[in-house]
Picture 1 (cartoon, one colour):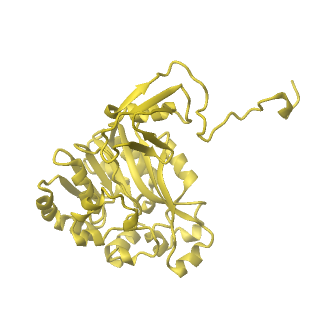
Picture 2: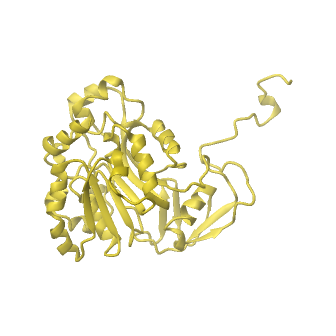
Picture 3: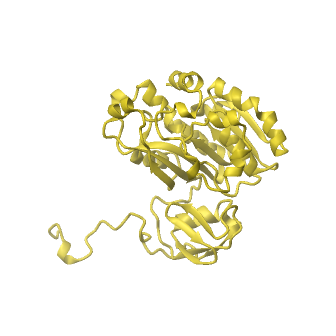
Length: 345
């Protein structure tokens, strides 16, 4: 599979227009604040972008960031501007041709930005432990449509978990399927290179995240993918694919369900590009200066991360009120005697 990916991204694809799906983000989907940042990136780097989402989370100034499967470096150079001269971005990729483009334009971007705060490493994302990276040293790890290409996704998540600081996050976009991919399709070279054959069934991803220490994955954005090549569309038949962005926090205190402790937060503003409202994920849009009830996990994600200085925190963990309303879980037992399904002992 590594050979297939290296050939597809190193030799077969010359620019993003060669892709056979609608994975690459349309310019209309890019927020206004990000457009001038992307405009600072060299055209050749931009043309070799094969991502399926936006991996520029908020409040990165001064952070150490790692980009898994950085390719020609578009996201690295975008993140470099966001972390600023006091931060640093490291890109890892196994494709020599892609890395050559990224490194070729490092002097160009250093001059453009006024600082040089990036580095590139050739290596495999399944073998992060072999790349001399310091454990517990990264504030944020990102990846853009790359995890699906890995033949050992569990190793990727396990190793990147070790590299994150406590309170750090894995913020990444990838392709998911609404069902498990049939065996005959999983080795198709074009389907694999197009990020389809290696896509995880979404529920298998949730279980994998739990197993590797990321207890409460949070969905940020999602959209269905259109397969623009008719031959590929016929192969996959009724499987539906989605581009989705998740954020996974390294917080061992998180629980497997959204538990209610009567807590709330107040966003006081100050987070970059979120003057009036901060969106933690698809379901948590926190308006400035308004009391916002949260579950215990959300409380920790804000209180124990780089976002803490921008919030006021209400409550503690002294009293438990059960599952938080609207979080997709409910008590499984009958709520009244008329719903009894078995005899008394």
